[in-house]
Length: 578
Ligand code: PEP
Ligand code: MG
Image (cartoon, rainbow, N blue to C red):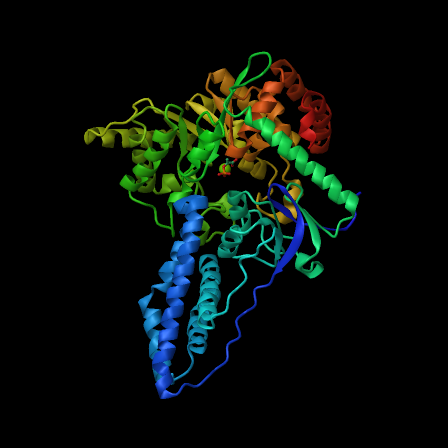
């Protein structure tokens, strides 16, 4: 159907771009060893110090740009790079060597920094290995500045940047230009390019393996960030097909504006609350501007930087900032879900981290961490719009134990006369098969449920959510998953507690009708999906949604469920087929 060479990768950031490729090849700086005359030494040191200053100033610009686009926490990586350039020990050592060995600065820098890089790479520690990349990047930046070479990061016309890989700085810098899209050979959904491209709202496909071998600068390419494909030198009819697609999407997005601030109520009157998932406080504005009726999942892991958990006061300020902004809506603050693929992996090695020390398990083993976070959350609840939620629960004992810590945290605050919401709502994520199967019993212990489909699918289907090799087995419409969700909703309803879905599934338009039909009270989604999800809900009848979800439970495979949904939804929501 599609003519031209098609390369398949991973859809990292949605959107479609048609344009001319710019192949970005980052050449390693050439470094020659040059002996200096005595009178050249001070000039060489001067050159080195100037290059450090120039590199810092470049990084400061990148940092400002990154803060503007991503907020301060999202831009931390650049702050760390600037700090490295301030490291006096290394700078002094390099100066001393230039003086002593009378060799050119580039050579000494290369030799000196390479020692650290080799040490970090050989450490066997993933965190240090990742930092070695940063150091390499930094070293090349300083050497380039000594050689007064400019790397291309500006271009005047619109281009699709194709590269083997992009550093965070490249990704941010290119975004100042008319970059239409990013395509990289390496990287997955959570690579820097993918995360930054999504935040920058630039379409991207990563993991294209050998795309750079098949593309020349100047080739016409189509980058489809929805499907995760790159088409090189497409035929005219394919270009036209994609141009029409872009128009339809733009038209569709314009129409969606109308749905931002209306409540999501089905034609026959069933209201579903649409909330936002956020990972940084800076995202609250976007969430509210997209029409969120609160925050259904505030992931708090961002607060932990370099493995250090901030003190209660600092945590309180972060949580309170969000609670205040969201007020009078609510914010559901989730306690640290470290472990698995998140943060602690760099500090705590395990053979099976997803089945290991993760989420509430860490909290219960380290009560001082849990308690200080609970006190911070409680203190942020003075306006009574904060709910607290626990991740990775797999047994009712954990729920009971965690509740004891809430009582303890409350007592500690009372003793100090610190105000908080005495009736704060306490809930759990249902994201393990065991908690889903025990939902009836757990529902009697808590005030609400939030179904974390990302993990529920991972653990139910025994498929690593981040592993590309088994991505096909990660099926959100797998009958086993649907049956568990249905059971959890039914259990919550019996116990008369609200239940939401906050996993990625809630943002899948195909799943919306299904979830509404199951009886979900709330869906918590990535902010940009809010208008669309509201639109779908307003287009359907609850009666039909119930019929569809009941019927969906009968099928035996994901394909059967999907085919059925596609047929049903075409009739109800025609535009879904963009
Ligand atoms: C989930 O598991 O669905 C979820 C929302 O939590 P996280 O993606 O943070 O694990
Ligand atoms: Mg989860």
